[in-house]
Length: 149
Length: 149
Image (tube, rainbow over all chains, first blue to last red; front, side):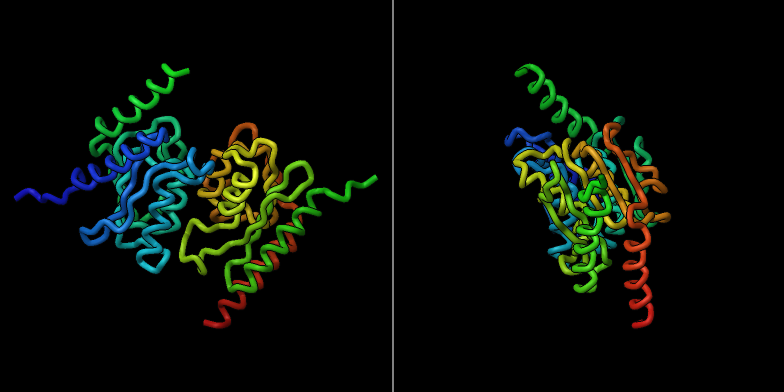
């Protein structure tokens, strides 16, 4: 039997967060954190609204999940994020010792893979889940931005 | 004539922040951000108190400085931090396009240099300012921790 709560199921939830960012005219990236089939944090990019380069979806989700759990390590958690994390977010994930990171679209320019950022050796990494849908939302945002300028 | 507001002057201010962290039983790291000879942000590591791996001194200082300036870029700012930034903090500094980063003690294991994290190409980097004093506070903290366990 197919698992209804597979990586695509949770990536859709992260994509819903990305759509909330899109509606706010933020670069549309969303993230959720899951532990034992339960979503404990939802966040989307708010760098413009908060005037803060650190307000990436992943950073907010890490803080919210740790707050929920009452501890700073996310050793049993999985992060779903619609775009491959950057150096900063991968660095935060490294400190959190998160169990698993699942991302959608690849960021060939500023993603942690291209930048050579290290995640924790215990962290499992899966890329390209719903890559097309996650990437399309980002493309739509940047095309609209360009047409406005 | 010697400039009274040189890098050592500001590193002493960052070290005062590190001492506040020490008093709270946090890993003693402090940071300040300066623009036009004015300190616009002061912060110290609060990862234990806030149960949050993202609560490094630099991250809080970046957020506070952007809040003060009303914009997310720190192109005219200098960060002083008592320990070499990690991947996460260097990644945040990259996004901020900060003008200059001055750090005290070198972190040979988890510093951004050893980890290969990229800062913004426009960012000037100076390491080893008051390295001895900054490092001694950290050593004192970890020796005391070890003796307690």
